[in-house]
Image 1 (spheres, each protein chain N blue to C red):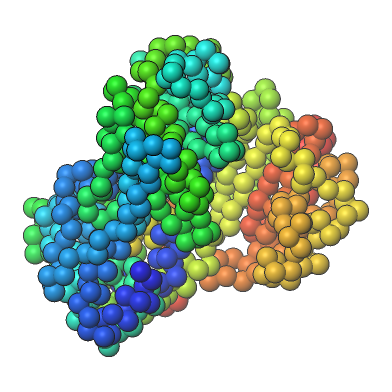
Image 2 (tube, rainbow over the protein chains, first blue to last red):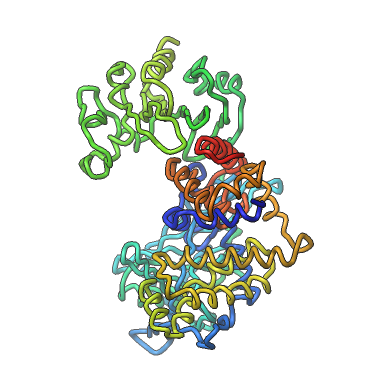
Length: 421
Length: 185
């Protein structure tokens, strides 16, 4: 079997695996940032580059010479006058994801900054309530403004997200063929809609360039939103030029994303005392990460042995975490022996989160509790060792662990070792 | 149009089937071809060949998942074209993917002699089903869709080093698994 042959063989993998890989979208575990749905991943950039190169247009030739079907576009007209008509092209592909920005931090815009970035037409009364966040990137060149992401809430309570940036915002909704462009206030608008079959909703979007600033507008809804989208674009294009210089970045927050040694981790002033002195025999270190940004502050250790894994993450208890705290007396919140697999069917929906990853007070944790969190299953190519996942609260410091291949007794020993420090 | 409806058109020998396939899967098919060939013209040629192959294969085939079905076809067509073009036009990223896979088949003739087409894939599928979701997705995106490490890292919001580490570990585990299953390596 030559090397290409095994590549071909992998082409015959189970279809379910392929479909799973194509469907999966992931939010970033560390960096909070987002350039809205319009800011895509590198692979999407690559696709967009192909798109822009003209490769995808005109529509490809087919063996039968049959042209692709025409996209069913929607035309939305101004309800009050004939000032504009917005064509919504039908997007067939969504390639949405979030963009990661290096050295990212963000801040809420002040009223003055909002007025500078989204100036209104003085002759019209604005009916929108606007809030916005500026996203910055710390680079070797200094602090750079990446974009402004705003929420526009109309008088009818309909919310739209508007992104404004000096950089072109990459489309995440694609259609086959050329879109029909509209013109509002002398500005060319590329607008469309996408039927999200996963939840039955419809996403409306539009992008345009105005005075060297790129805008992307997106909202989710039904027919009412079609008119809202057109009205909002009319509102934005009627305003004066955006002044990004009015945004003054705050002092950048402390940020870290460092790979450490175990020794360095144990020396960490904030969380080092919560790293065990020893880890289970035979486990090799994958990595130690110290991460801090405006949202997260944690120290994590990852080890593995063959098919077995061990992760140990230390952070401050967050407000969201508090919902997962349970007393050892409330066994329905954590005892896995009470629920059959698949647990999605057996665990009541109200308990999903807490049963999935409960948090125990260290004072209440016993070996029996750890055993109640442990289970074994047999899997192809893997060990059938113990697995468990839960958190332990030491005052306001939360240790969350996920283990595979380690006995409850050893895990309990690691946890109680921390209490003796 | 739903996949099922498109496949019905193929079975009715209605040429609109090809148009609908192109409408829905043009970007997808070209991307896979481009990942292997890194050449737009070649990717376009592969796309059209894929539609022809699908037209010829359905019926009698009735694929459950049209995307995976088309993906398999375009992978093979792109690979044929890559063989034809030989090393001069082969792209570095794809060479790297093939090189990583070569770790699984250090001693090659025995594998080919012992396993019929699809048997090794079935074993790998079984192995992957036993791994966690991220491991499966990263593996499939790398070796089925031929995505670059950088692209996968961005798609999965992981560091490139983490993706490399995951793939390294998965290949090692897979090699052990295949050995246990009697694949001579």
